[in-house]
Length: 170
Image: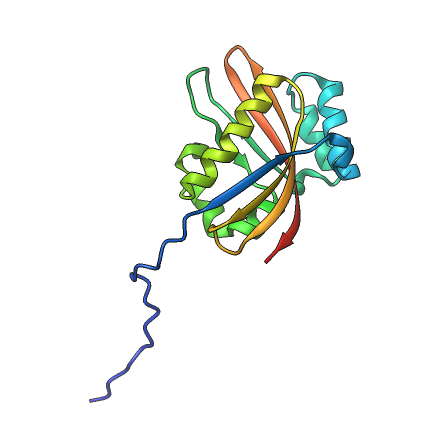
């Protein structure tokens, strides 16, 4: 009888938990990339969220750089509707499959999700763009990125567009 031995990948092992650490620094839009400023300018121009914004992003080749969240109703949470390439490059495709069409608060990276969720809420409440540099460790490889956030609220429904520029992956 032949015995086959398969190397264990130790999938069930508990790895040491490194608490996530997120530092968010508010910047001015003047510090954003040209393409982030173009997205914000278009959001301001349109003032309301309609299908013409995604159409603009696709025509300009910018849709893949953006992550989009929206709520289904007034009391509903924001859910991930579109995940951009920069977001998937740092958090992974498996993460993307797990969170698409799910509430942002169900993100498995709870502490990170809460800190970024506060920024989403601020951009919705402000009715104006929010631009930050975000430094993250304890969620995979450490990374630094900027995001230009633009939020909307209409009859209780909310939405946020996040134009993400990854600056460094460590």
